[in-house]
Structures are given as structure tokens and as C-alpha cells.
Length: 512
Figure 1 (tube, rainbow, N blue to C red):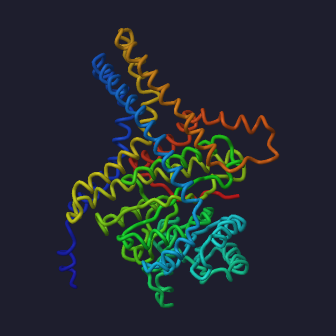
Figure 2: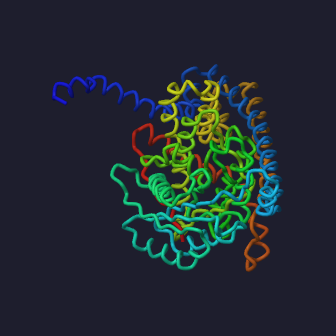
Figure 3: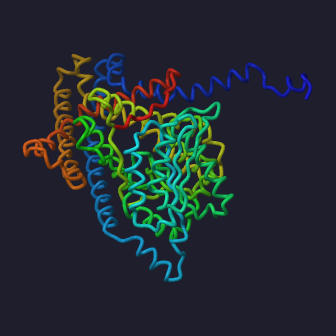
């Protein structure tokens, strides 16, 4: 191609600049909306005086009432998920798989389970417990495969994999060590590692003659331990699902592995995260891929693998699948727990920093908003209502993460502080009193969350004194304070970074 042809093919400079401006505007919009709404209780009364204060107070009162209803919905949702989990945890799913195959239906035991575990800096004992749980699961050894991803330069990681293969290799149909070269242009992190690992496994298993639609891959975090019935449950339900080629199976994550070894604030965050995930499982239309999940390897190949230039690997993979398969795609609940570690670092302060950074990394999923907006109108084959409803679930979830807790706790007080005239009126005092009552009702639901937590927590350490075992439950009443510091603030930082173009770097959660 001649120089003149290249010049004609390239878009004008102004057009390139407009495209970059439009892309940057898409990125900045979520953070801008967050700050406008967050500061609204202050700037509206300042601009519009008493009438603005009345408007804010009325809106906050509506939100307070909404939160009472929402709290009831969350409580009933968690309880519903808990009942289903306890029901399915009691069943022998391997025996049910064998019965299903003998009945002449689709044989669940035709499916092989491949666990792919990306790892970097994790100590051997963390990986050992993860692999041990896979080995101990109630599913035939000859139907289990494992692939562990390390960086090409991570020689201690190589040694860990060699030790694991020596100890457990005979318990798997295949044990693979995937060495990630860290290709140029990637954002180093789990998503890029899974991109390489997924492509590597597809190539190797295809060469070995496997049917990729019969290989179910679990994207497994290095500290996650599958439930004993997990693979049998997946196989039984996958065989019965008509749209099995277009779905992701999502277990219920419980961060209980080291729950009694972490500080109080981290324990509160782990409990609230686990229960929030339980609630989402009661709302199928809101369920997205989170942390560790299962789908067919053929599904992964058709989606185009995980993106290698992003941090939120799970939610981005969800959206890639949605825009690939449209209305056929869904995420379905696995009514079994998958057990993860709470952040625990080398010392007390580092543990809290690790927790903060983990929540900030999850909140960086706000970057999915511009990603979805850029593709929203490019897929007319997907019904508009479905695109809109899923986008709104995404956007409102990230906004509510920050906006609603702050509004609930402080929203009504701000217009009273700012507008003296409004604070002195009978209406202002009456609305403030009603708002306080609604806030009290909402916060009282912590008693139900405490009950659920008692039902699902592992036994407390035997060497704990009786007073400590009892006092541990009172810590959950501190959630409003802990939630602001370790949930709202890191999420707000993520939104602000995106607004300012200060992109987040992936930080591995420290394991000890």
C-alpha cells in the first residue's frame, strides 16, 4: 500500500480526537454521576435554600422507606438461599448422576471437570488446601483435570506446582502446569492469566482429542475450596439444562476458611459479602459471574476467552458472554457453597489494607459501564428491554454501593445542617423524626443477619474463652461504621480514579 493510500485510509486527526474524547467521556460519566448524587444533599439546599432542603428531605424519606422494604427483601432472599443450600448439601449428587445415566437420559458422567487455578505469590499450603478439596470431592478421579497457572519467571511457583503434582498427580486424569509468559500489552492480573490459561488448555485438550463441550472448566481462585458435592451437582444439572451451552454456573461464595484468624473489621466485611452474595442468588436476573464459576470450555472459546487488558475478570467475562449469546445466555445458581479466604496479610495493618484494596478491585467493575455503553446499540439482535434492564442492574448496583448507605445514614441530616430555616420548621423536625425511625427499623435487621451468620459459620476455635465466643456476635452491630470505611470509601476511590483517568493496577491479595 502506498503512502497516499495509507493517508486516505487513516481517519482525520479531528475524528480521532473526537473518538478519544467520546471514549473518555464514557469512562468519566459513572464517576461524575456518583459525585453529583453523593453531594446532592448539600448542593441542592445551598442553591435552592428551604425549598431545596424540603426536596432533599422528601427524597431521603422515600429512600429510607425503600430501604425498609429492601432490608426485608434481603432478609427473605438470604433465608431462601440458605434453605436451598442446606437441602442440596445433604444430597449425594454422584449417586444421582449414576441414576440419571442408568435411566437413559443424558449421562451426567460424560462431563469432565477441569479446574484452572491462577497463582502468584501464594504459599504452598494455600494451594495444597485448594487442590486437596478438589481431590476429596465426591466425583470420579478419572473425570477430573487440573491446570495451575504460574508466570514463566515465577520459579517458587514452579516448585509449588511440582510438589502438588508429586502429591496429587495420581488423583487426576490430567495435571497441567501452565506457564504464563506475560504477553506484551496485557494488564497483569487474574484476567490476563486466565486468558493465557484458557487458550493453552483449549489447544492442549484439542490436541489430546477431547470434546470441549464435554469439558466443564472452573475458574478457581487459588484460595477457594470447592464443596464435596460440587462437581456432581454441576454435572447433574448441566446434563438436564436445555441451554447448557450458553450458561455459567455460579456457586455461593462464603469467606469462611480463615474467618476466626482475621481482625474484627475484616470478619464483618467477609460476613456481609457472603450474605450479599446469598441474596443475589435469590434474584436470578441480578446474578452475574463472581470470582469462581463454571462453564464449558467450548463456551469459553466461543466467547473469546477472558480479556487480557482488564482487572475485573469475572464481570467482564459475563458481559462478553452476554453480547456473544444474547438472550440465550444466563448465569444460574449452584446451591452449594464455595469456601474462600478472607484477606489476611503479614500483620494487623496490612490485613486491613489488603481488605480495602480487595473491595476497591471489586468496585473497579464500574469500568464495565463504559464497556457496555459502547456496545449497547451494536447488538440489535438482543431485545432492547434485556439490554436496558441488565445495564441498569449493573449501573445502579455500583451507584447504590456508594450512594445509598451514605444517603441512608447522613442524607437527612445534611439539609438540616445547611438550611437553618428548614431545620427550624415543624415540617423539618417531623420529617427528621420519621427518617430516624425508618433508619432504626432498617438497622434492626442486623439481628436477622446475625442469625444467618450463626447458622453458616464454622465452629469457633476450641481454645477461645467463653466470653470471647459470646462477644464475637456483637461485632456485627458495628457494620455501619466498618461498611463506610472498608466498602464505601474504596468503591468511591475506584469511581473517582475512573473519573480522573487514574487507572487501577492489579494487586494480588496477600495470603499467609
